[in-house]
Image 1 (cartoon, rainbow, N blue to C red):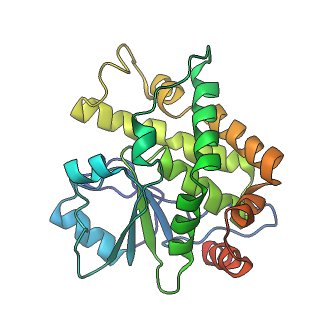
Image 2 (cartoon, rainbow, N blue to C red):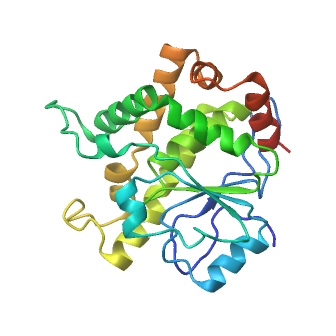
Length: 249
């Protein structure tokens, strides 16, 4: 199969390869190595074959316990790929009330992402360590919409590889376009997005690019950047370099 940014599957809308992005030093990220995905519970037999033919070796499920129990990943229990779960949000955080703050969507999203990166460091360490393990790649990491938890992991991988911040921001924002198709097809989150007429409007509410820009600034200000964050959470230099070299052609 030739690499392509979005994989056209029947049972998922936001499965994307993060290869082909230019880095600040003139390299490019490697195709068919890191894939990001929305929910994988509806993947058909043909979809599964497509991913296996793409070279898939590891599935990393980033969802909460209730999400996994309600909509199991089709590869859970597979003898063809390794299935690993790292609960990136934590079950307790799912029910925690949001503090009362008058924030727009961009700043609220950025605040929530930044807090998650700060508070769930062990989960990020284990997720990235899994992806850095020998023989783990190609790998796909997934959440529900393929934009929030998945978007943060993608940002860390791309940032570590030297992809410019604006490219990372654009990659994050693409989810708005493809998750809008899911919204139209399945009617999910109808109340949250009532009145939305275009994917651009949907993006502004579901995956506003400005939010990721602020998150990357948070990582720079607090940790000295993506690599500084990776070291802070406990990844070894060898693991960090393994992720970097694997992500580059």
